Length: 296
Ligand SMILES: NC(=O)c1ccc[n+]([C@@H]2O[C@H](COP(=O)([O-])OP(=O)(O)OC[C@H]3O[C@@H](n4cnc5c(N)ncnc54)[C@H](O)[C@@H]3O)[C@@H](O)[C@H]2O)c1
Image 1 (cartoon, rainbow, N blue to C red):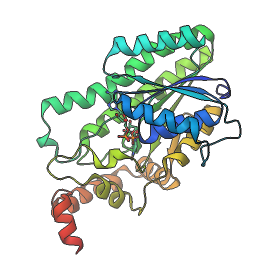
Image 2: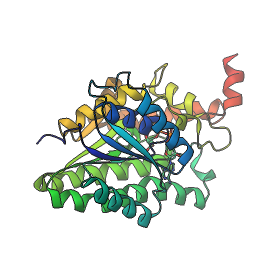
Image 3: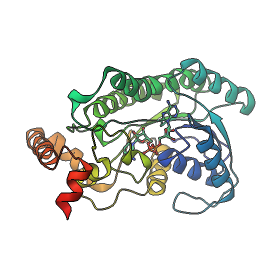
């Protein structure tokens, strides 16, 4: 089974106002799709639409360049709003070919510091938000016998990691949902692809800190890389993965090697992860000030 043709496709990208969602929107428009850039931050969605409809270059850009985009305010935790958006897109465009459930948040730091409100917030956005997208879009795709659902999980959905436990929990849920739904969806002609990147160069690396947790340093140092992945490079790989109806898009190659190690030697990974938590705590639980002092 091949994924939907991108030229002329109708797509919704949640969390499209920044980072990976913006890069996906850019690549889709460049390939000739119509993209609804949906974000809780409407101003950010507007900026992305302005940018992707005037600039069509970079690794994610195809030769078509004939796509279009529109900004929409959407809070993925609001199930009725997600359903209403899908209905509107189906009514106005006649179909929904691609649903990107991409919006996400994170918390970084020792688990005992998380409040119940923070646990609820990450479950609401990262799990319920994705469920709302599937619940709203999947029946339309079944009716047409076509389409693809693309869930942005993370390497944290495939491998455990200390100090980002709530995030890892939600991303494991997304991987479980996507890979299971995929088995059912194939019989309806609908594709499901789960995106599992390691660190990507977006704003999320600097968000969600508890007590000075330095996410950018934590992720890059933990993954043994100097630079996070370019979101446009990831977006190009995701579109290729959708075309081939791949179950998983794992980027970069180093992340695929880490996943292999996790499956072949979980005990080794368990010890490596515990050691990294100890190292991070020793420099101040990944604390930015302590780290900067230590680096001097
Ligand atoms: N950047 C990385 O290193 C990385 C790695 C693996 C997975 N991811 C995942 O990629 C996805 C996109 O993250 P990003 O890196 O582009 O981060 P980002 O912070 O740059 O973008 C996230 C976007 O989601 C939006 N958003 C947050 N809550 C929302 C809500 N309730 N409803 C609608 N929109 C909402 C934000 O306004 C923002 O525009 C997330 O699911 C994230 O977990 C990121």
